[in-house]
Length: 376
Ligand code: GDP
Image (tube, rainbow, N blue to C red; front, side, top):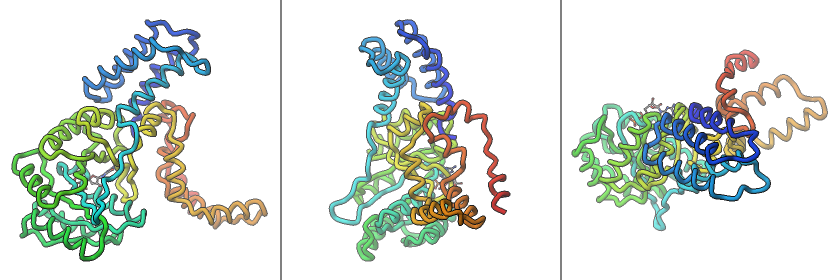
């Protein structure tokens, strides 16, 4: 579950402040020491942690406590605000071209989840009534082209390919031309990844960038690799001047170091996050909602959006009527359960509910097999 480890450690640190009528400088200092340790253990960049703790300490001690807040709530409020700032304050949207198509170039190391993410973004754009085209410009990895074609098929999005005998620069250029021809308003270009950053890879990516002048150069990094992801982001940014980062595998990232450091270290925003293996497992990266989740305060807005995407409102109203007139059948019950399941694992959904203590949720095992058994 995302941020689980960091979240429970921070809540531990704040627990000690609760019940105190007035906070002394020492109270704040002690709490900040724990927050610092929690962030370092979460693999947040050392300099980022240092600056963060300095800012929060200064603000916590110096300021008048708002009357409506207890001193502990006051500190949590400041930590929350500074976490939001650290991650970029507001969501960062895609750079849209005034002359379609908008060109998005995907770059990243092998295994980060780049190819999957091109499919996720294409599906996201489709859901927003856009017409994307996927372009297969990874000619080195065996089966990369096939993987993209399979993804395209699954979401009914066209995939442009010239096989693996043509140079990636020419494929990218032809892909953009093809988008114009078929009236696609977004072109997403999947480029090659390597296991490590090397000159040759960077040169090729620079050449593609020069040839097609993309609106966005999106770096895909694996959140679970923590500081490594931050180093990768720094290096790609130095060579390519990327415009945004996409964090994948946030669903398995209990620590959160990459999410909290990348913006501060590279100056580039995280625009999206991958939160699972399914193509619908994509989230817009909202710094404020992430901060809420890290602090264990839930994320009611994402919960509502997930529900809106997965639950058929008309059907829900009908069910309500049936329930009230006692016409609710077992088939109706089954259909309700299936709609709820579309929202994802129950454990992840519970994490978004404000007021639930994530430290306690950590011990809770929701047995999804029980739900499957009830369905039968
Ligand atoms: P690429 O080499 O960067 O193109 O990586 P792929 O797109 O082939 O993905 C590598 C692996 O990561 C695959 O097994 C994906 O299913 C998995 N993966 C990608 N994104 C996510 C994610 O957000 N969450 C999880 N849990 N797995 C993911």
